[in-house]
Image 1: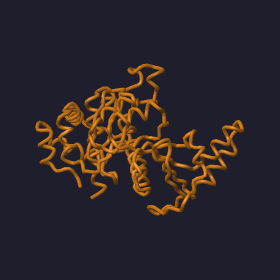
Image 2: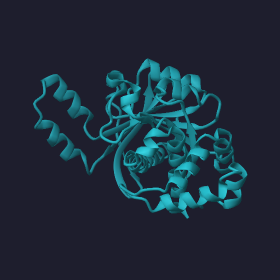
Image 3: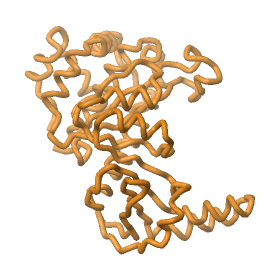
Image 4: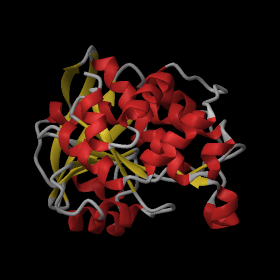
Length: 294
């Protein structure tokens, strides 16, 4: 399921063949690996070719494509917060959407303006038809408003019970077996939307034991214990609960992939200095992972 040379040539006429070679090189890269200066130049050429990147996505994206945001700085030393030290010291920004099918097979990336905030990122997908599967971010009015304005279906991942979940806390959790794991799960209405809840039975004991050993106020401890081990998602759509579990798992696998991508970029100062080369590298890194689905 790798990308054909003809397609790369059609999208990046001046560097398509050489870009294919760089993709192959990146496929075997690890932290500390070094690209040649010629490779960096090719990545920079591809990264600034926004129309070619979009053409590639149009060719590879399936009907059920999902979009996952990856925002924030990449630095050679630490993930500095740009709110504290300014954009320059914070390093270059990743700031892209990764586009895949529902199983995580990559189709490309959508570059965003550097240091784009999450609100603006979601709105930028207005009427694209993608399903947005978010990072685990709070269910705030601002986030919901941005997702609504995108016009896209969405799975808003949560790490804890939403604070207003209380009235629905009597919901019965049912057994769900998916992808070799056993969950207690439920699907219910939540503030005119749908809430999907998953509790991985294998992990709950150790999570709650860890919380029990923390020095917390009683109120905080009760809340964390109630939330321990749960993964939650909110959506406008009453999806099949197995479909939601599949999309969450796809996001988790893609998170691991993009963590490796961020780490490799941070080891090469040429990528940190050249925003176009950074985008070109992220695209190449994502595309080389199509081979894992062959």
